[in-house]
Amino acid sequence: MLRTERLRACYGLFQALFDVNIRVGPSEVVALIGSNGAGKSTLFRSIVGSVRVSPRSVWLDDVAVGGETERRQLNRGVVLVPEGRQLFPSLSVLENLQLAARNGRRGQWTIERLFDELSVLRPLSKRPATSLSGGQQQLVAIGRALVTNPSYLLCDEVSLGLSPLAVTDVYSLLKKASADGTAIVLVEQNVNRALSESDRFYCLQKGRVMLEGESAAADRAKVAQAYFGV
Amino acid sequence: MAIACETLIDGLLLGALYALFGLGLSISLGVMRMINIAHGDFIVVGAYLTSLTMQSAGVQPLTSLVVVVPAMFILGWLLQRLLLNYVVGGSMFAPLLVTFGLSVIIQNLLQETFTADTRSLQAGDIARRGFEVGSISIGILPLLSAGVAVLLFALTHLLLARTHFGRQSRAVADDPATARLIGVDDRNFFAIVTGFVFAVIAIASVLYAMRTPFSPSAGPERLLYSFEAVVLGGLGSLWGTLAGGLVIGVAQLFGARISSGLGPFFGHLIFLLLLLARPNGFFNRQAR
Image (cartoon, rainbow over all chains, first blue to last red; front, side, top):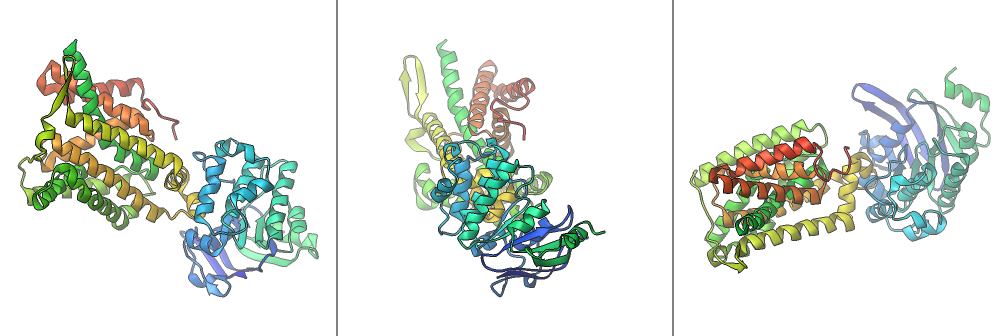
């Protein structure tokens, strides 16, 4: 179980998150819904250690892990796929994966398995990572996180700027990860897609959780209200 | 003609040493976006360390590398961990100022400890030996140091291109924040990089001290040559640094042929002219 407890995060004097409580069970899929600036990315960055937060605001299996480095969170199995993919341009596709695999945990997700699942990437493995199409880059970015064998995979804006076909590929990869027991938290601009792909959801607005519930039973009107704040 | 040929060869051999000075600077700039103004002073520190090791252990300069290289690695590691990690990653200015201060401190400490007198290493027989190719004579020691320099460039290239260390280096250089996200512990990693840079400095300083007398104030001039090699080659380009060093070396020796005191001046002149022609250096991959 990964959860935040009264999580507050600040950038200097600006407070971005106000007492946010969310929880993600093992192998659960959770969607974070909210407009730009709602604090979704900050929430992710607080959990993985890129934004400093107090120790007792992030809990993993009832151990307080807030404010620790990205490296330690990675070794505990909490990994972020950052918004905009952020592959390393100086590294080939394969090297991006090798770097992550070496730093991460051992498990069922190996580079070989990833290339088996995503056969389109295998012939491109020697190419510079950023020379691929947006959809392929997103697959590599998710793959790069997967080969560290996370228990909790946090995906920021997985489908932003991708073609509908590429979005389908991305979600089919996430489904495979989920089927293997990886819990997934995803930020998705398309609210319908977010609800249909997830078990539960949280609506964030201006750094606060406005609404939460089972995705299947979500009231679209209430979600829209929590999203737009009207 | 024979004289021109000999000058060219001597210049290339000297230039390889300058390139080796620049190698460390090139790595710290490429990986950490950090310029170490005290780089030259650490070359001099390495030379004094070699001198001390030779005196206390009674060994040849090249044998002293066994002590000097690990000692300099540790010095670099500690320096990064205890000082430079606090200033790296922000603006370019903080590391510049800190290492400038470091440079002043080192020069004064060296002068306090070893006096301002010049020292030279007793390199023994190897410094005097040479061989003839036609009418051109080539010294063994310059040839050896050039060979070591090229070898170190090749090894560094392989290290960066083929290993986990290299992948981490390139990832951190591209995007430190994302590198952290996939488990590169950049503070610890930077310490290892600086350790490596200092190990390279150690080798460069032994080769340097074997052929030139040195004094506590010799550092800034070493820094200048290193810097010219790096800038001329293009920031971030390893082989560019080697080429840059060679050009400076050749220019200096041809200058010294024209008038014996004007060697360094001609080096700087050629640097300036080439910089005007190619402001980004020969091998700049792209302006980042």
